[in-house]
Length: 450
Image 1 (cartoon, helix red, strand yellow):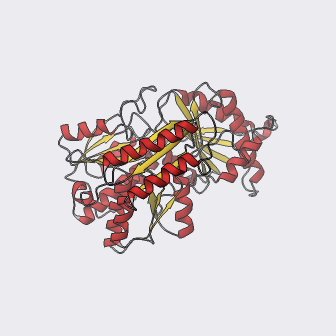
Image 2 (image 1 turned 135 degrees about the vertical axis):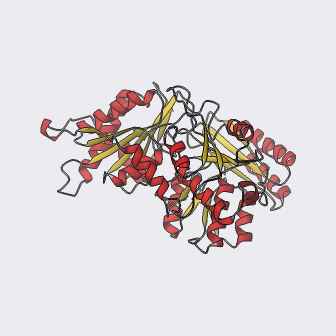
Image 3 (image 1 turned 45 degrees about the horizontal axis):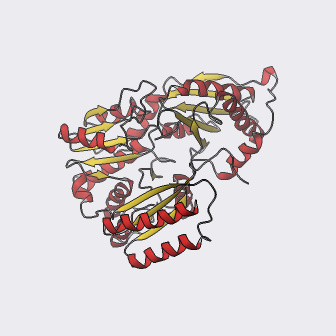
C-alpha cells in the first residue's frame, strides 16, 4: 500500500499546508483513536488512553487541541504533558499504562514545520502496518461516539519530574559528574527545562544555551543540526565537553574540549568500547547505510559484530530486537540503548557516553581521537519525477566507475529521501577532494535523469 501521509518518522510538513492543519489533526486523532478502541480486548479498560506531548513550537497549541478533540470523539482518554522531549512520551506511555503515545513535533526541522510521531504501549515506534491501518481509517468519516462514551482529558502535572528521575536512574549510582564543566545546547526545544536539571543534579557544572524558547526559535542556529553554536560556547567557557540536542530531544552530537565535533557514529563507538571492556556488550552493534566506514572498521578491530539497516531509527530498533542486541544508532545522533530505554533518547545517550568516559577514564577527545571519520560528501538532488536508480544505465555506470576507483577504500550510497522529493548522493573515502569530485560526478548524472 502506498502511504500518503506517513514518512520515515511519522507525519511532517509545513503548518497550514495539508496535512499539517487542524481539520486533518482532528481526523487523525479520531482515526488513531478508533483503532485503539477497536483493538481494545481488555474489559477492564473502559476507555483506551493516549499520552500527548509536544515540543516548543507555537503551532503545538493548535495541533494539540485538534488531536485531543479527535481522540475524545473516538472514546479515548487523553493525558496531556505539555512541552517535553519525544523519548519522555515513550517512557510516560509505559508508566501510565496507556495504549499509545503521540508527540507533536517536527524534530530538527525549522520552526514553520510540525508533525507527529507515534509510540506503542511498549514505548516503541509503531510498525509500518499500523501506519497503513491509520491511513485507511483516515478515509472514513468521523462518527462521534455516544455522549456517555466520550473520552476525557487530563493534564499530567508531574510529567517533567517523572522523566527527570527516569533519566537519572540510567546513570550508575556509584558514579557522578562532579568535576565536569558541560555546555548544553537545548535547541530552544523540548529539552530546555529538563536537561540542565538532570546533568546538574548528577553533579556537573552546567552552562545552558538554546534554553529560551519563545515558540518561534526552535532549532534556529542552535542544536545538533547547527554544531557551530555549541562548539563556540564550549571553547568560550573552556568546558570539558559540549552536548547539543535537537528540537525534540531524540538526537545528540557532542563537542570535545578542543572543539572537535563528535557525531552519533563516534558516540556509539565510545559506548561500545566501554561495554566491551567490562564484558557487558550484549551481542553486536547496529548502524545504518549512512554509518561511516571508519566506524565499521573500528568495530571490526574491536572484535564487535556490526550490521547496517536502512536509514531511520525504527529500522535500527527492528534489527536490535531481532538480534537480541542492545545498542545501535545513526550518525545523525539517534542512539538506542535498549538496556536503558525503548527508544532513542538524546539525554540518556549522552549519559551513557559520560558513563563510558568515566569507566574508560578518558576525556571525550582521547576516547575518539584514534577513530577519525572518513570524509563523507552528501549531495541532495531535487527531482521532479520518480527515478529508478537501479535501471538508469548512466547513473549505474557512474557509480560502478567511482566504486572501482575507490577500490574498497570507500563507498557510494544513492537513496531517495523519505521526506522530500530528493535523491541523496553520498560518497565516502579517504581523500576529501577525490570524494567531492566523485559525488559531483554522480550527482550530475542524477540531475540529468531528473
